[in-house]
Length: 125
Image (cartoon, rainbow, N blue to C red):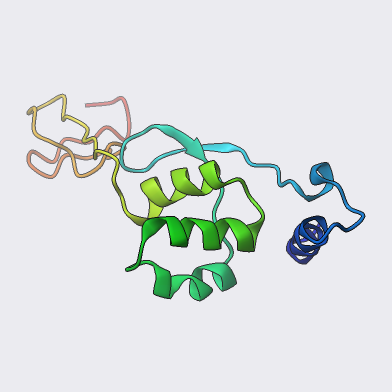
């Protein structure tokens, strides 16, 4: 089912239409958070949805979450997890540690230290 079909199904279901809940649910997988490494939903709203809810980012958070959930037809808890990890960046940032000098790496997945320039791209020294 395309995104337009999903939205149509959501509207029909909300209005007492013929399509059931199983027909409008999206398949949502898991991904790893870029900042904290936690396993989070792979849900990401469409660009039209993000542009339409842009004005709600500075307002109450629950209004933003409800608008995204309504537009994308996804459960509110999935949207809350997305907003926490991807919009407001409330999760704790986890850094990698250089095995050579012990300094913090730029990111969790960094392969080269910015302090001592040690590289972990290959196993060779």
